[in-house]
Length: 332
Image 1 (tube, rainbow, N blue to C red):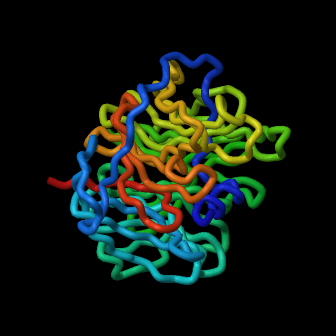
Image 2: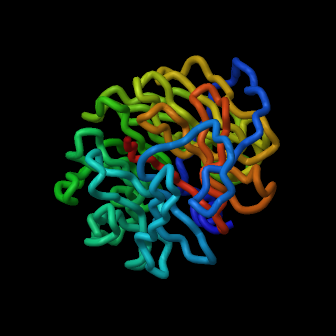
């Protein structure tokens, strides 16, 4: 399924594992409505997003980065490389987008202007560099890299222009898909600590570290695999997608969406349908963005949005093909 296959079979998604106890309950069933382009049939909408939504889209066998202007739904294709371009992240001022691409023959972190111009390779290294995350102050980009250990990945930092790349975390196993806290003081990322599951994939969990590399700790430990997607606007919670309650033997993290305190306590499940829900990001306006196959069970994933308590799940746009990685730069 396009982007989902490209990311997940390579085990290069943000993966975490939640604590054994799960409190809270599934939200009431809400009939989703469509926030579509101007040609779509008008309908009442529980959630109307405002801003520019960047995402990866497989519109026919090629994964590229797109931007959608909301609420109008105007769509802009920003990349057109025959390679896979995905995992977009906005610069704090909204003028640039960093993303992952293998167009040079291996994974690199690229950056471009928000209109798609000026695409350039920031990392330029024979190692695998991917999963960029722009710091809230705009100075740094965190990313995963195999530079120090070809058998595993570490979390690295570099200046926003690609200079001074250096490791932030170097430990056993795979560390990937970092996410900055809103104040820039901490990063959550996905770590295996070298543990392998019976399915022969990494036992991914959530680790947290201070931005200077101190205070490294693992905050979760449970069955299955999961994906960390971002921090709440106040920095107190992390949103994750996990298969722990749906299919813990699966090799992908999609299943349900949870929130957890940054110290590892208070796990709460937000979704509970039979769909495969994959957490993507927590927008600055307070909404949680995710992808799901709930419109086409077992088929292509669409972009959805919900309130931070899991209520009012809303289909953002019924596009043809697979959509992943939605991240919003809010607007008026």
